[in-house]
Length: 175
Image 1 (tube, rainbow, N blue to C red):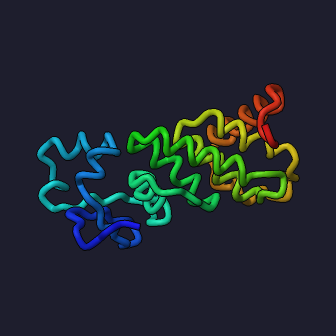
Image 2 (tube, rainbow, N blue to C red):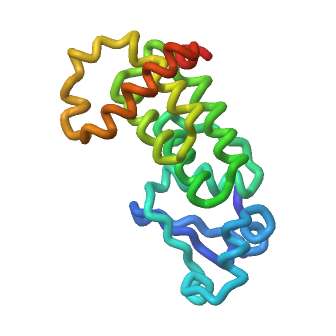
């Protein structure tokens, strides 16, 4: 794991968890951080970067930057998908996508499928959007109307288009 005794920087999270890290490692393996560090920014002075997301998403990001093996839950992997897009780590997004595809199957709950689809949309990952949407036709959506009650019309239409595309393209459910 990380040698925190010589760390010179911290990454903090929404849930007040802090990860002691090393700027040399972050600058070397994380282009976003290197670009931020090369400018005069508040984070450089404070020696802290705050990421407004749960530590369960940040932990895999830090592990990835440190070249450690990643093992994530579906919840973590879909969150990491968003972080990888936001913080310019496409290879982390690839790892998260691979892990997602290995975890999701017909037994995955509709709630988890909705979360995965929404996060894929937020991360602008069209392949995973179609992957998640491909499982919806096998679910009895009428029994789960409560999951969609807070969605606006545009979001529902996007999901319906993705479901249609996934069915016509043969995506999802193991594709």
